[in-house]
Image (tube, rainbow over all chains, first blue to last red; front, side):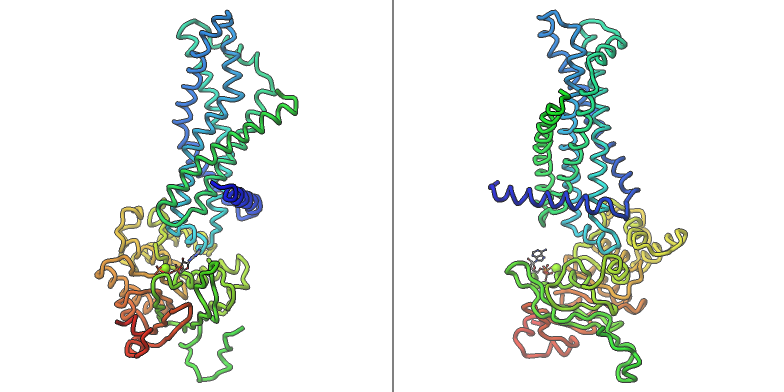
Length: 252
Length: 258
Ligand SMILES: Nc1ncnc2c1ncn2[C@@H]1O[C@H](COP(=O)(O)OP(=O)(O)OP(=O)(O)O)[C@@H](O)[C@H]1O
Ligand SMILES: [Mg+2]
């Protein structure tokens, strides 16, 4: 992509974001559609998020055990794994899975609606398609990703507990105690807040790619594909910004 | 306002000739692509007018300007006495409830059943139908296109001809005064295409709707048109009844009727 095209794309995406804020907070509110999208988006990504969360916790635990054992710090595994999952791995892995699953499906769905004129059909049927399709989906991804992340964290931590018990023994109570002893407010809050931004970016980019998808069936595939690529990239950028910000605020 | 007061011209024009849709000197271009240049056309109540034009001549653009999906650069479009360029969102929505639009690609909502497709415009237009009446309206619209049994099917399960008819039912459910058909028979086999043509005529007789039909299928033109307008190089090149136009000697007109 040339520098010019990148700039143009950024400009268009910014205008799209501005339109979201302009139209999103004016009636008519599409509440039933928003709830339906929350359900669909949450439900669709549940299995993937659960599985990746479990594997993430398990792998982190099993990988870190030998190193920790070398230093005789095996009892620190819960604390370390807990911090890693809650502060970084949980949010970022869930967001990437979410981008792959939901970002692409939103891009493809809106893209095919654009190509087959369903978006125009909504517009002539007394419906603002931007509100009905875009605003509801962006809000739904913004609200659901934090929920899914917390769920993935919980599953990941449980997997870590299982992982520890594969080689040694600990009780769940001790494990949980260890984790919470090592956690502070400053670990949890920034991590949760950034997931809202991840969700917002993924929903917005998926909708943008689909809503302005090119004519033809390749346009739909391209919309789905670039929705994933761009939103994954933006997730990392937001993560980088978040780290800097929390550092500046003294929360690190 | 362009539409003359009915009393102002006693007996000169019968009530059937009231203009319901007027397009005047319309210009629309995309960059250097000048699609419509000075296009004018008038539709009178109850008549079917077919706009004939080659592929890419701007037929869909014309119809999208009329319904307000595209904005023309210059010219005026008056639909049912209202200048569409001056309407705000709500007024536009109210007007659109009276103007049915049959999309070239049908534009049925893939994720909804046939019934939900039909309910969508009904519910979204804030029309005050009691909920109890909705089911009846859906069945009536489906019976008009002889597809009552498909109510619970998904669009993907239907054939091309059936989808076209469901799309028609979805516009009929609002009992529009005007229906805009964008190439209703393109992509259908000849037999199914003729069925759609007859359906267009039936709708005209049953509900007294005015129709603007866009086409390049000559059988469709012959069967459905009360009047034909030729869209050539962005202008309304000629208009008149089918039989009259088909006997003209002008080479640009002959092209269409060859
Ligand atoms: N949204 C748009 N942006 C840019 N150009 C467009 C747009 N819509 C249509 N055009 C251009 O306008 C011209 C007319 O297109 P239009 O879709 O009206 O053709 P048509 O007469 O309906 O043809 P067909 O019979 O193939 O449907 C084409 O050259 C097309 O490229
Ligand atoms: Mg067309």
